[in-house]
Length: 98
Image (cartoon, rainbow, N blue to C red; front, top):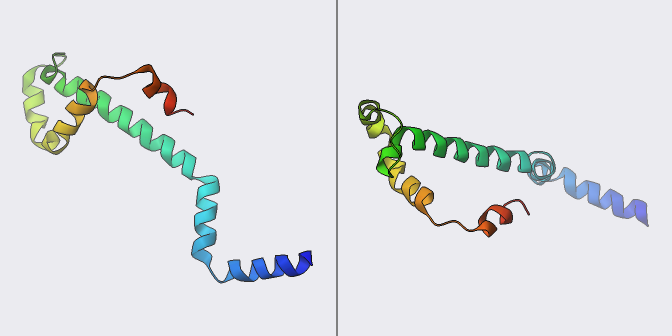
């Protein structure tokens, strides 16, 4: 009975390598990818804060360097300002790690 079930399961898995690949990705790499995306977002926020902190009232670098980089940052500037200036609650920090 169990052998028959396992053999039918193995036959189904052999027929769909994409499904097996997605399961293996979920088991091995999904959490790592999420952590890396969070870290990239944090580093991006830190970079934007150092370069364009004067837009939210925290001048760190002379405006010359900020103006040189401004054309490259324009597409993501509005989203960054909204995310940095958003009011945060204690549950925002705790909810992501649960």
